[in-house]
Image 1 (cartoon, rainbow, N blue to C red):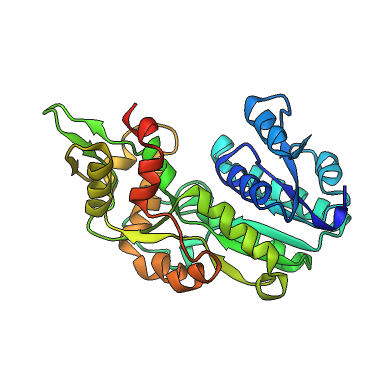
Image 2 (tube, rainbow, N blue to C red):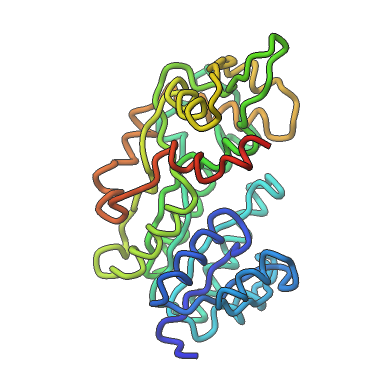
Length: 313
């Protein structure tokens, strides 16, 4: 294995890391070292069958991360906040990643991040509650605040990939459901505001182009976005693919926060940030900049059509 083109991909069996691993394996320019907690899992074995070198590591074990990074040229780094929903744990994981990357002297680190919503939401703004230790949207705020600052301070040659709402969520959490009146309906608290979204496959394509252009991307923040769509436009795309009218019936943010599943309060805040602070959310996700790296992103309709069986199940 030539280490000059080895990219270690964290979370290689997850949404982001899996997309990056597949894009790199399909292209063939880079050799993929796919990191997972269980190399025997079906998803890990699929990556191995595509040509990845699968290794085991965990974010809480810096030694395992050092072994995963050893001799590699670069890495794609992502943290699984939603597995534990602990900002303290996530920050410790980021510190382990940085320490291991420094020890390996990686030449290009691609960090999956978000913004600190508290830069846009005033401390005395009462529209949404604080969550935990002073966070508005913890999975945003921790990455865009403390984590990004640690990468900047580390001296690592880092590209910051600024993520958007995954269209993939429309196949799971946000999937249309049959309402009591028989109508197939789409329920997300988006109001009338357009939000930035992206298909996971485009995360991989954009990461590939970032890695190909280190002189242009190291030190830069690159928005990961395919298009801006309103809830009504998402419902129209769902209708087109499913061949049945899909109504858009958005709950309020307070209604969404009170649904009761773990993390509903945080997601309610996230959607409220999307819709009531578009200058911050959309303003950071410039379509022209994103398309300079990924000129032909999947539209939502094309993405849904490719996953119609999963959507209709």
